[in-house]
Length: 239
Ligand code: SF4
Image (cartoon, rainbow, N blue to C red; front, side):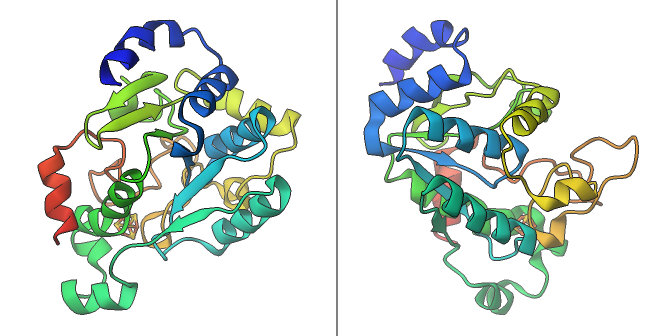
């Protein structure tokens, strides 16, 4: 599969998001799923997917620290698109995590907290798939700059599709308005990027859109889209 991806990767760069989605659904059937935290880009992808294929798999990593607005949006998605969101949880509940690792791990060691609550659950979920679809865009962070529309995910060992890789934020919001796509109410309160309650704040005028994530830490990614060795992931799974 890795070799096949290398062969079509270049051609796929000229495909629009719907073409990437159609290819993925045709190629992998029920062994491909959209991964989403329901940001603006994720909502565009979910809406597009519903126009390409009625039934598609959609999962989210529920850290159990999400905003009420995010949970509300999840309910709206299930009602509007007729899908059941597959919710993936950490091995430790928030209470167990506190017992084992101490209080407010996100404030002491956010990388470890993200590994426990996001990276390990994702690795576990991806173990049942042959491909996953994300809504990352190249201009979101430096780590995402090299994203291709179709690529081999070395970290998790499956195909990764990024249909919106070359889209801008303006295109995303134009699509949302034109198609009346539901979105997280926090976006209207200066939260351009939304994660866990403990690690997300509103941004001030002129700040980078991701400045509200992990404020006070030199951290811009939770680790889901950064290349790490499989050994590292295995270590997390054993944590
Ligand atoms: S975003 Fe914050 S609270 Fe959520 S998993 Fe990462 S460190 Fe923990």
